[in-house]
Length: 167
Image (tube, rainbow, N blue to C red; front, side):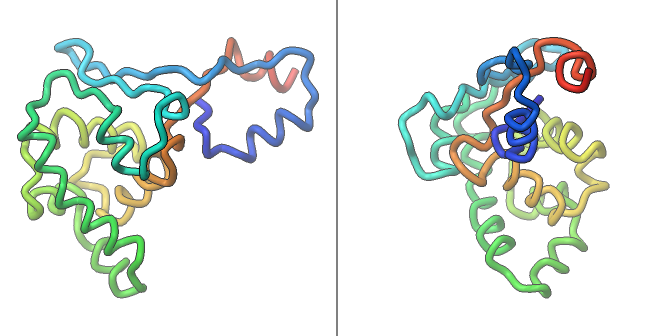
């Protein structure tokens, strides 16, 4: 997919002056597990503007997680704030801690971690949370989800990228 924050890709497509747009419009996304559809992410740019983080919490639909499970993510707000506003010492501290350990220490429910966070870490960082530093996971989540309300909006290529863009 081509996420909204991939401005360099969108600039390249403009420079290429392709006859037809090789990408779809922004599309709703779903997260599936063997149990079926687990979560739905809307096109955030089509939603009423809210502060980032609050928008993602309000508009993302986790279909099988309880409100309690979702509330256990709240302490991550403080971790994000500390990490993003911190100095090198803070970054090192988060780099030495796995994302799974951070979630455990902050009281994130096992179910929320297993059904929402772990799949995102596997998709974004290509490794399980116990092998990814909290710094890497928080940085990835910031870029793809929390940088702005529209950061997680995605467009898809209408076919083979090589054929439609670079042929």
